[in-house]
Image 1 (cartoon, helix red, strand yellow):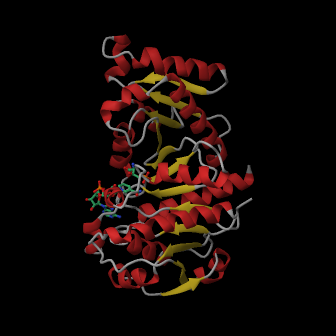
Image 2 (cartoon, rainbow, N blue to C red; image 1 turned 45 degrees about the vertical axis):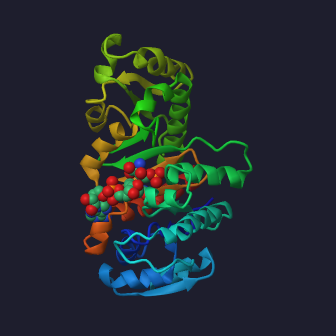
Image 3 (spheres, rainbow, N blue to C red; image 1 turned 180 degrees about the horizontal axis):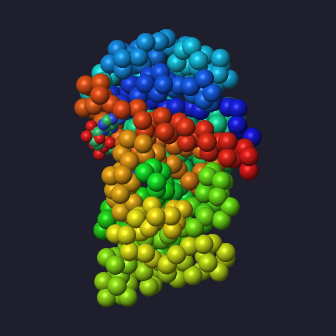
Length: 339
Ligand SMILES: NC(=O)c1ccc[n+]([C@@H]2O[C@H](COP(=O)([O-])OP(=O)(O)OC[C@H]3O[C@@H](n4cnc5c(N)ncnc54)[C@H](O)[C@@H]3O)[C@@H](O)[C@H]2O)c1
Ligand SMILES: N[C@H](C(=O)O)[C@H](O)COP(=O)(O)O
């Protein structure tokens, strides 16, 4: 359906790595790749161009349909206004533009003008100062999906990171560790698993993916002596899901389940909390990892690193993860079109 459309790349925090990485990702474009355009202030992009070391022009476009023609000779920019912001020096006044860029990108997917959204990193704490109420992109994008679909409730967005041979989804995302055990109900685990299963089929071309549930406690609870969540919530969820035809394991010890996936035993792991899943993945592949949001009506990917102000300011930021995010979003659009 959306296979010929360009990807919408958001500005992210203009003081962070986003503008430089966007230049570098464009510089490394191939003639066969799906075009992208960036929704950003052209002044910010011009100001970061020297640091990026990329020679080239910006072309201001009025609509995503203009991106394809522009992309091979110039960086296509859909202009939004943003106050002057120096690389490496976060400016809370840029919050409105950061948010507007995300909103516009999502709007284009609903108008069927963009194949998906690729987000540059944001600094959550900076946005909170200006009243942003969402823990991160993931939850904000779910709310935007709700608004566009006129649903009473936002869809449950699932964070999945892809890289280093792993696909790791999270049962809970931006939650304080103290709250996690209470959030891990059987119904949540079933809902998350269903979304991960559907996401793997729809976007990654699996017909019947094999999913591992990580345990919450050491040794997956050691038969209840180190915690009861595996016996009371995780394994009953797995049993119910298997009854409905999913290939999903009981709780696996969190210290070895990622290795088991690397050995080919699973197509994805569902981790119970943020750092259980993200620490192994970022350790294996900080520069090539991609953050994907499953459960939304549109495609969204992102680099797996943050705003990296230091490496933005000294120009050493690596574009690998943004390039991987652009390529993965394009592959996902292709898989959806072929489905
Ligand atoms: N997708 C996102 O929007 C996203 C993801 C993660 C963190 N964040 C935000 O980023 C901010 C900073 O978080 P952090 O310091 O924990 O993580 P970070 O990823 O920005 O930095 C971690 C380390 O990686 C380095 N680094 C980051 N990007 C790099 C790149 N492209 N090339 C080379 N080195 C790079 C940094 O210099 C630092 O040493 C926080 O406000 C956080 O909320 C946003
Ligand atoms: N949890 C992500 C990470 O640590 O990489 C990051 O904060 C991005 O979250 P959003 O995509 O929701 O902004």
